[in-house]
Figure 1: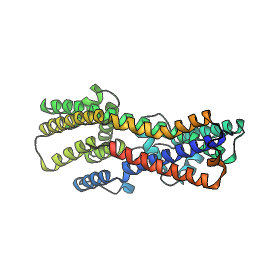
Figure 2 (figure 1 turned 90 degrees about the horizontal axis):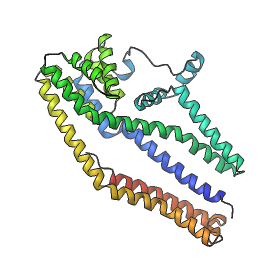
Figure 3 (figure 1 turned 180 degrees about the vertical axis):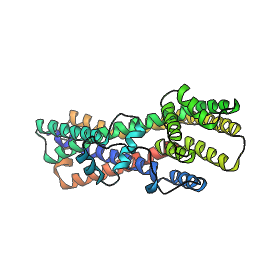
Length: 324
C-alpha cells in the first residue's frame, strides 16, 4: 500500500493542530480578556498615556538592512506585531531573517516531498508544516523566556524594595536590577532605565516594559508603581507585598502542574493512540484499512475522525490548563 496516504493524514492532523494552537495563543496574548482588562487599567491610570499609534519611541527597530526591503515589509499588515514577537522571544532575529528561515524551511519540506515523489497536495502540506517550525521555535523561545522572567521577578522586586529602603530613587532601583540581576529580566530593566535616562517619562517607560514583556505579574508591578506615583504611599512595602503574592502564586502553579501531569500524559496517549493502532493494524494486515483511503465514504470517515480528534485534544488542553 502507498504510504503517502498515511503521511497525508498525519500532516493534515499536525497542520490543523499547530494552526489552531498558534491562532489561540496569539489571540489570547493580545486580545484575550485578561490582556484587554490590564491594558484598559494601564490606560486609565497612566496620565501621560496616548494611543498606541501616537507613541513616539526612541528608536524603531529596522525590519531589514535593505531600505527597499524595509519599505516593502512596512506594507504588510501587522508586521510590527511579528517584530514584537521576535523581541519577546529574545532571539537575535530580524523580521527579514525570520521570514528567510521560514521560506528555507518550507522549501526544504517541498524538496523532501519531491525526492519521495509524493502527491502534489502532500507536497504543499509538507511545505506548510516545515514552514511552521520556525514559528513554533519562536513561540517556544518566547514562552520559556516569559516563564524565566516570571520566576526572576520576585527577586527583582525584593532588590528594588531594599534599594528604596536604602534611600535610592525608583530609577536607581531599576539600575540596580539591571546591573545585579540575571538575564533576561536584567536586560529588560536595563532598557527601561536607559529610556528614562534618554528623557522618556517613567510612565511611558514602564508602559513600554509591559509591552515588551506581556507577563501578568509584571503588569501588576507596573500598575502598582503607576498608582503609587499618582496617590503616594510606601512603594517598598508595596513591592514586597506583591513579591510575596507572586511567590505564592508560582508555588501554587507548580503544585497544579504536578497534579495535572496525569491529565497531560493522558492527552498525549489519547492523541497518539489512533495513529499507533492504525500503524500496527497495517503491519498485521496491510489491506485492512484500504477502504478508508480508496472509498469516498472512507475519506468522509477519516475527515470526521480527524475533526473530532482535534476538538477533543483542544478540549483536553483547555481542561488541564489552569490559570492561577
